[in-house]
Length: 148
Image 1 (cartoon, one colour):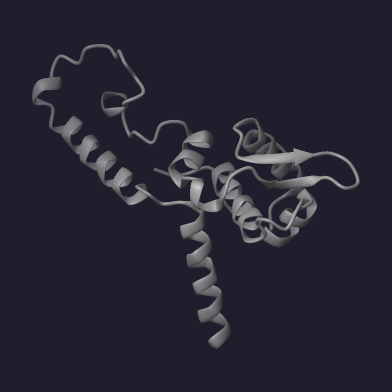
Image 2: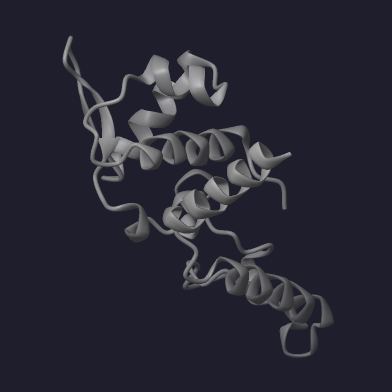
């Protein structure tokens, strides 16, 4: 599965907001500059994050953006699904679909089993992964890079 640029930029923007959590509003142009995100693209991403209740945005001279929740409360899976939809590789293993056309070979479908294993593996890798985890990883990487 390949994630879109929107998802990547959303995570980068949230990382920037998370890094400065509790410090007040951050301007979108500052986020764009720090994380190398096209500003016009970032505005649409921030609007999606705002509409989902993940960030608070205020217009005006003293405005900007900040996280609506603590970094440890923002699940990476939810952020990805906000921009990508379900992570299921096929409709037959998508828990969001309550009714799908009957597959005549579903009971003995080796391909469905493959999709299910892939999906389960991906979900396990995202389980309990929060923005705080990524912030900690990023901090460790920067610390390691500064020693080189």
